[in-house]
Image 1 (cartoon, rainbow, N blue to C red):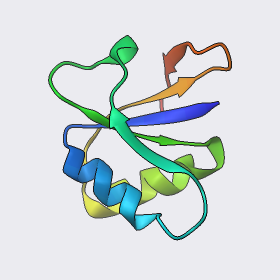
Image 2 (cartoon, helix red, strand yellow):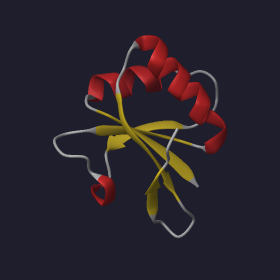
Image 3 (tube, helix red, strand yellow):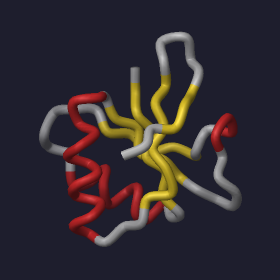
Image 4 (spheres, rainbow, N blue to C red):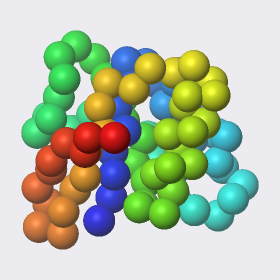
Amino acid sequence: MYYYIAFNSITFANRIKNHFRYDGDYVGVMHTPSQFALGGCSYSVKVKPPKLQQVLAISDEFGFKIKGVFQQTKDGKFFEVNL
């Protein structure tokens, strides 16, 4: 199971990924999946559940606006997470 945190900019997503590059946990950047595309171009940071709160906190600290947070279930479906 993964969480996808959608941003307006690949720059924002890459800065988040680079912030966590040495901590050993997976943080990936990808085009926001079409199943929950939020209009326009967007990129998502893909993280495992234990990393979600850390990524949200750093995004807030950096001032990066989040377009949405989505959870991918084991069967590959997505649903929006209200935080």
